[in-house]
Length: 477
Image (cartoon, rainbow, N blue to C red; front, top):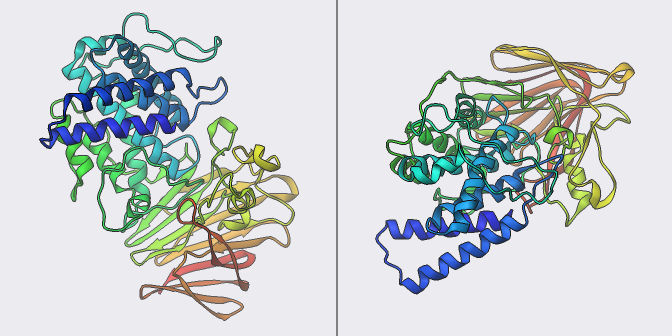
């Protein structure tokens, strides 16, 4: 994975420098080509393909191999990589993204990573189809060498063309590419951040936006929206360097837009969003991702997040780290660290002990949407005596939550760092941020702490409010 990402960034950096007028010595360019070839051979010989599951790791392999194949245009070996990678990219976008455009790994931040790879690689294929049609013909006709490591792997399928080189992807894939940006856009807060549903390892494919803040581009997802629109020939306002370069590069080769209506319900991902003026509410209910493997899912079913123009108030706590500290990784993906209903003795997901269980999780919650709409939703998880039903009702100033749950269940609300809290009494708490107050009403309120992480490698503590599961209200004053 890292080899594919590295070589794509290396080759893009060289091309950006040349486009800016920098003239490199031939010895340097030969070294770049040799390095790219070495990377391509390593990727082709070590594909992270799995018979049961291919994830963002394999997508990164393909994106890197496509970049090398495009760069070494006169190299016969690289031409085979390009033919294989183009076909595999289309196949993996179909497999790893739902028809609505959201990613299949049950993580909003992994959606960003995979969408970056998919959108930039699709843009590269569009450019080649327009400017090097003789190379593009290998994607839809003729035999292609299969680099899969297993003899049981199927032959890479041909690309289904919608209308010749002018439209090199079928309508279903075009809707997926467009939906990648729409999904990210539906989650955007005013500062460009989103709720980090599922894992967040701060992974990026290309970092082309500029900021004077060291980690701003790790938290800002607006570039995904801009990049998706650029692939379809649409400019955003304000724009950014990534989208501007794509727009200029794809002039005359961009895709056409079919559907521009805003969407807030993402049933295939398992996430609902509602906006009321400056308020954004998200509600998680769906599968654990990765075709049941759950490697990047959290115990966040029936959890909510709430933000306003002042920032996040009720928030998802992130990931922390993976293998360096398994106990932290497991704490942050457990139900206790999410704004959901905690049932005594029940965890939403189960994982194997030790390192073997760090990247898989069994879905014990089996959450399902009962009904949803513009005014709220009803969802359930667990069954029998452990059945939990959560009703979300949007109000004029916030949200009303009604939980029907087993005796002793707790409604858990994780606060974003920077949110001040005043416990008025056991039935009311005031949450304050940036001059905005969110009033939380419930029964038997109490305050304690849980783990928190805004980006990979950073772990701290934050406050959380708990109350008896039943009826609670969160309304802005």
